[in-house]
Amino acid sequence: MQRDNELFDLIDAEKERQLNGLELIASENFVSEQVLEAAGSVLTNKYAEGYPGKRYYGGCDVVDEVENLAIDRLKELFNAEYANVQPHSGSQANTAVFHACMKPGDKFLGFDLSHGGHLTHGSPVNFSGKLYNPVFYGVDKETGLIDYDEVQKIAEKEQPKMIIAGASAYSREIDYKRFREIADSVGAILFADIAHPAGLIAKGLLSDPIPHCHIVSSTTHKTLRGPRGGIIMMGKDFDNPFGETLKNGSPKKMSMLLNSGVFPGNQGGPLEHIIAAKAVAFGEALTDEFLHYTVQVKKNAKRMAEAFMKKDYQVISGGTDNHMMLIDLRNKDISGKEAEEALGKADITVNKNMVPFDDKSPFVTSGIRIGTPAVTTRGLKEADMDTIVDLIDRVITNYQDDEKLEAVRQDVINLMQGRPLFQM
Ligand code: PLP
Image (tube, rainbow, N blue to C red; front, top):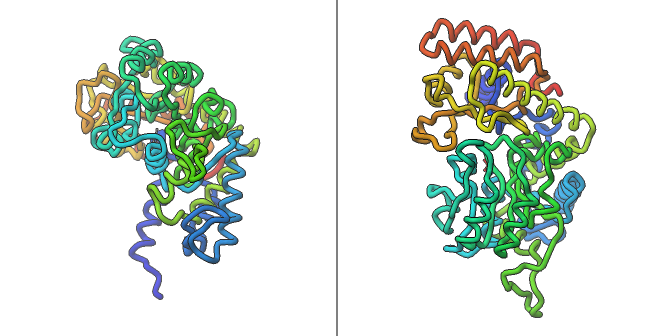
């Protein structure tokens, strides 16, 4: 077969883009060579519906070992009794949790998308908002922080069956213990979605949801720095509280409901090549090198937020505890959309983002979201964060001046020159 140059030229072009640019999208990262190698391996050829030891296909001995390795490493990483590594993505993981815990029409309480939540936490354009009945909590207008007393009040009024703690654009610690007290007071399942901060949580740099939440899901490709994918975990397995029983009348364990929520509830054959790449990433995340990496991610984010505030940028909640920050650009007379586009011209990639109590549409927005996981993987340190903020500020203040944007682009190329994608 002839090599498909048409396609591989595109991959080369994307690699160049990644090498030359400044990647500040909070949900992106660069994987190691060995994660890439596993993701591009012959395991992609194998069908393996079911779970290790209980497959619907022959020839699964090796992939059983691969999947068990991924499960064992993940359990060790988060000190979890149960792990499912099959979800194809974070959204698929969350879909499976809904399958396991909710019936269509059931009510749940999630974090408002425009305040930092995720589509799968009840957005009307997502399955979670179409099939189920979402109610929302948000952040306090003054502090930009989750108001737990308010969450308690909403929970008492609405009596949800499930509460979701977790976010796509919230830069602060989440108090899972308090969330559990709220959930217990109304008899709800507490489900934490740690897609964003998972890597920092794994290394003990943020509070741990595992001891407090019934169920925890995550993506594997953000701060966890693995291949694109999802996972589900529980600190402790437990009898499901929904009255689901085995043939002998005893209650089904929650792990059974979650496993069948993933397969056959929501997916067919697992992606064993990606599960292998997850296993590699979990192995990397267990090392001290990864601890140093996550410490640096956090230091970089803190320094960047401070540098922005020195230049009179409004960082929501006045700073960050994790790997990201949300910036309200309304005092800079530029929308999130305009900022994203102008920064793109200078090869600086961010995403526009709604800010709490935004008066612009999700297509325009008043803010941008910025994260440090990817630039930290490329080896950038605190002093580089000051440089990055200077570059961004030059773009924002000159966003209609293409010549000045081109000058910033050259500075970005110089800053990133000689830095491989995966360095730290
Ligand atoms: N949950 C949260 C909190 C997220 O931020 C994301 C992705 O941004 C997801 C779930 C979904 O992940 P995926 O894009 O892999 O479906």
